[in-house]
Amino acid sequence: MFKKILIANRGEIAVRIVRACREMGIPTVAVYSEADSEALATMLADEAICIGPAASASSYLSPERILSAAIAMGADAIHPGFGFLSENSRFARMCEECHIRFIGPDSEMIARMGSKAEAKNTMQAAGVPVVPGCPDVIFDSEVGRAEAARIGYPVMVKAVSGGGGKGMRIVRSDDEWSLQFAAAQRESEKAFGDEAMYLEKYVEHPRHVEVQILADAQGHVVYLGERDCTVQRHHQKVIEESPCPVLTPELRRQMGEAAVAAARAVGYENAGTVEFLVDASGAFYFMEMNTRIQVEHPVTEVMTGIDLIQAQIRIAAGEPLPFRQEDIHPRGWAMECRINAEDPERNFMPCPGTVTECHFPGGMGIRVDSAVYTGCRIPPYYDSMLVKLIAHGATREETIRRMEGALDELVLEGVTTNQEYLKQILRHPVFRAGEHDTSFLETCME
Ligand code: MV4
Image 1 (tube, rainbow, N blue to C red):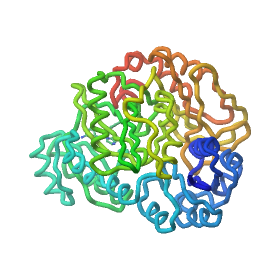
Image 2 (spheres, protein in one colour; image 1 turned 180 degrees about the horizontal axis):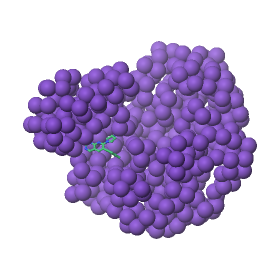
Image 3 (tube, protein in one colour; image 1 turned 90 degrees about the horizontal axis):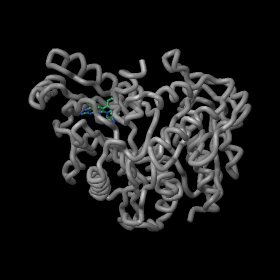
Image 4 (cartoon, protein in one colour; image 1 turned 180 degrees about the vertical axis):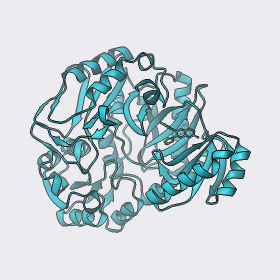
């Protein structure tokens, strides 16, 4: 097992990783920027080291600074968490070259899944359902226009280097083609320095359903059920739940097996998430594979009783999975709400500040993942997520009621949050019926 793990992240996920390591008896090093010197993770980790100024580019996003810290502190592994360097294949390769274990898949796998067009073609070849489209990468607008006509409008233009909605446009007719293609390509060039695009049929009113998988170095692959992340705003997830309210047991098994086939096809190792779109008829299509631990991983943890961070660490250390598919029995219903320091009344503008008063809910089936404490400062430089509330119950209704109680009980003073907005979503009849699609927040929460 590793002798010391450096946590290349901040906020609640850094705290989450410290806790997993502590349980495993592995010493931890927290890294922090000048804006995070009083962060909870720096206090809970065994050691902490400042890696630079507040700006992410010169701290949490700097491979050189993080690797220097790991070498200086004698860490033999790095957990990247999510965001920041977690899906940066160059960083993973630098770790490999320095003989420091990157806790995740290897750098080639990250690069391979990072190319969304290549990932899609690989999955199609492995027999995983994909959205009909064009297998070729498109640079030229007029080449794309001809392909769009062949596929049939509406189509979706996506950035090969994209993901999470950046560099993506719906095109509804040939008249719109030039404008939308140019806009998507420009956005991709700006965000990823890559003008490569791909094209597929647009799926109307889909749900976002993702399957969590674990794969060890010995070639065992299991799925741990799905998470429905359909409640999103501008590609930011707001509420996630498991199981997906519209899947039949048969569809669930098919998607789980498709996710396992996807992982096997590429020789995947470590934790991964296979993202699907599910249309109104129940047809599902591979979208992307995320090679990191995800924000919403606790939903799967409370459903299965499996500690995903601990599993990631053990897999990276070469240990085989201690369970097989038939040992995994997701139980009940789970839901996560993301509490952000933002103002829904002011177009969800981020609201950094000092948390002057803080009380977390508890009781049956409630878990709180957070790095917030009374008196802590929320810096303006990073993501605005403050708290993840996770509720677990026997049924969807019981879980929603527990979540409503937790949202009532949660106190965060000094900063504006989306707490009330979340309560409104939970009360909405369309959400309550589980009948929402990805346009729910825009169409129902105006
Ligand atoms: C789509 C789609 C419809 N048709 N692809 C958004 C993020 C990226 N992972 C995939 N996304 C979409 N791809 C086709 N061919 C609709 C979306 C989409 C979406 C997906 C999941 C959750 C919310 C969404 C909101 C808008 C669009």
